Amino acid sequence: MNIYVLLKKTFDTEEKIVVQDSRIEDEGAEFIINPYDEYAIEEAIVQRDAHGGEVTVITIGDEASEKQLRTALAMGADKAVLINTEEDLEDGDQFTTAKILEAYFEDKEADLILAGNVAIDEASGQVGPRLAELLGIPYVTTITKLSIEGDAVSIEKDVEGDVEIIETSLPLLVTCQQGLNEPRYPSLPGIMKAKKKPLEELEIDDLDLEEDDVEAKTKTIDIYLPPEKEAGKVLEGEVEDQVKELVTLLRNDKKVL
Amino acid sequence: MSDKLLVIGEVRDKDIRNVSFEAIAAAKQISDDAEIVGVLLGGTDLKSAGEEFIAYGADRVITVTHENLETYTSEGYGQAILEIIDELTPSGIVMGHTSIGKDLTPKIASRLSAGLISDVVDIEKDGDDSVYIRPIYSGKAFEKKTFEDDFIFVTIRPNNIPALEKDGSRTGEVTNKDIDIKDLRTVVKDVVRKASEGVDLSEANVIVAGGRGVKSADGFKPLYELAEVLGGAVGASRGACDADYCDYALQIGQTGKVVTPDLYIAVGISGAIQHLAGMSNSKVIVAINKDPEANIFNVADYGIVGDLFEVIPLLIEEIKKSKIAVS
Image 1 (cartoon, rainbow over the protein chains, first blue to last red):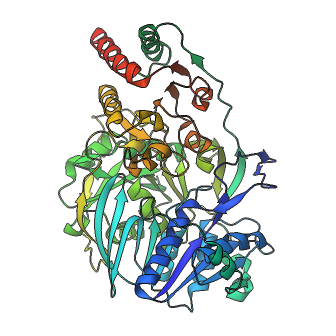
Image 2 (image 1 turned 90 degrees about the vertical axis):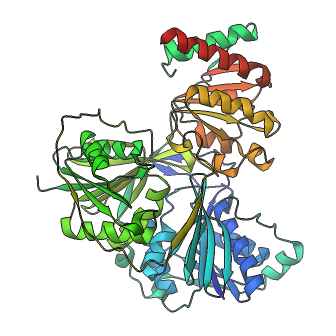
Image 3 (image 1 turned 180 degrees about the horizontal axis):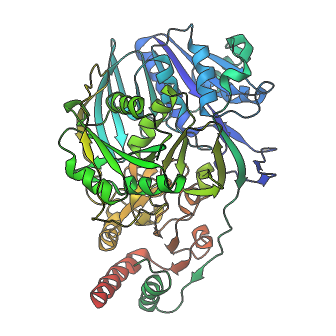
């Protein structure tokens, strides 16, 4: 089975966000694999081990993205592809990303494509479904269970806490939700092996794309931090009195009761 | 009225979801002279839902009923919406940023080669143009976005853009359109209701969330009771989910749900940065925690330092009393 994983690097969840000149300052920030993409990598490895085939991890990014790709290889993926857009593209959006991936997949025979259900930075959740539509294959988002038998696929999908049981078939794109699996940590031998696994680097002209083909449909005109929240009031006195005061404050001052 | 904005509504258990009414209000903010065309899809008659949609500001409503629309699939809904778009050539689409909205809109945007600005919490006007504000990094920052083309396509986060007042005197046409929905490659065989009791987290006005301090799955019981008294929903921190006190579906934070209720009561939650990202834009935050140094107190409007198992029952009683006093 040809399995592909779409990976994005994101800020470490511990990072504080610093905005400078309407842009997020990323100098010195720690990057990680988007946490939802880790579920996708883990699931890809599990499915390959069960059904055979190969796992290829793809990211669109810059030189530094190699680090996250190597981590995915160390977890157990077989091959990695970096589509480096650093020199060609200033600002892309989800349209851009999906178009680039479409071009990449044009001559591939993908049976299964996995992605995170959302990236924790921009949180659009668009790229997976957009790509599936461009490739003309079905997709299921926010999956929590995946069983494949031949071409038949059975899925459990999280829908705002309810679970849908879905039947579909390969080729297929899925996006992964928490609860699907427990992503493994790279083992030491895994890390050693990862160094020798193939990592292909492409630019958009290798995919026969011009900048115009992938020009963003939306534009970010400003980025800013929310107003700093002032520390509030810690109530005092007997617990009974604190509770009374709290209810009064919520009802009369804040009008939320 | 040459401009048309489509508002795709969602019907759940016969009722239109509140976020769909909010989507109508958002469409009016985007253009106050556009014709607002509501679209409702489902398996059975939607006429009365359509009339409800008009009372909340839609100018007319197109319904599509088909057995293959009984449960949502991106393919089924996609076929219906794309055919309506083809016929009406609207200037934009607005929908709620819900499970269905998130799943469906990228497909349609992709087909239309259009931009899509999702999870919008506010709309600002710049002359006739609109600027869309959405949280990024789970609310640690915000971005302002615009479209490069004329076509507008946004999903709005529940609970942020207020719906218009219901006006039962409004009139408008509700027409059912015959569209054959076929060749579906994905089929929903069954739906297991786990979240059926109570209010959906993303749309809840009040959330009572528990953390590791709740200590056990049993410890969540008083939280459910408090949520019920307040007409709210129960959420949890990652710590509580990892410890198996509750289902991951309840997790609030940078991984998990991002919520903005009117009232957020954090119970036994220390306030890790990842959790704060998911809730710190709530309108009013109350923290109840044994540890006076807990980080959660830095974002709380009101804090009670104390044992939650003592505080919560008192709070339930006090709220019940205050409700009786009011009514």
